[in-house]
Image (cartoon, rainbow, N blue to C red; front, top):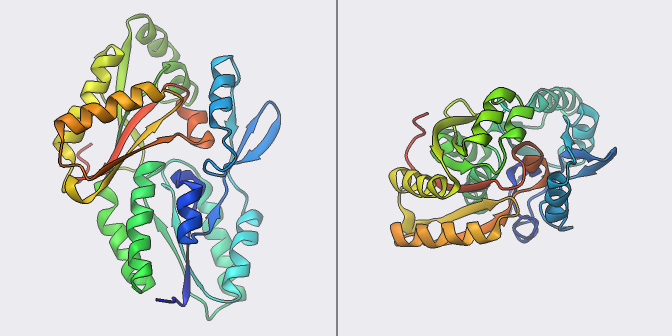
Length: 292
């Protein structure tokens, strides 16, 4: 059903380019820099992810930055000239970028006062956000209004889960999520943090285990404890260049939760990967309300 508004999101959702193309979802491309050169995340279209993780293993340290207000104006204004706009944004708690989105929104609504422009904070990032984007877009395709789609996202954003572990604690230390001392001793003792998408819209530490295999088993356990209606959903495994471990995680999930409708394995994008590093492995799904 044709809609009188445009549904849009950003690349920090890690929404695969092929899905965005198929559904005709416009995507704001988020920036990252490597070796002094700025790039924009295209959600797998150019296939740069493995090369990025190889370079990170060799010592490269990519950086991310906020997209400026002027860039958002360039994305949004051509749409608002013609239609209303519903923008599904990554978590406001993980970057100040959303302030630039709101600034662009205010400027454009002054210029186009008859338009409607909703910005919906998913309190998620990467594949949990993908799940919210796709669920919301299904409603969009059914002809639901902007208000109805916004309400669905707000009602369900605490049900979008990610349970993950990382390959090297130094990336978490670099981002300030743990101290450099904790990273040093954790690496020496083979301590692996289990991290989840938290109630506050950030990636929060949930527990610590010893060893990679134990970490993967714990991810399976937490998925089994929290998933709801697995027979109706696609679970997304995000992996930062650890494909064999991702396949092992898929096998374990199918053994422990045989009702899962489908499982998709996907590479972590460069913006998210710049913060979590190579070796990151995550299971993402819709389930009970977040408890952490």
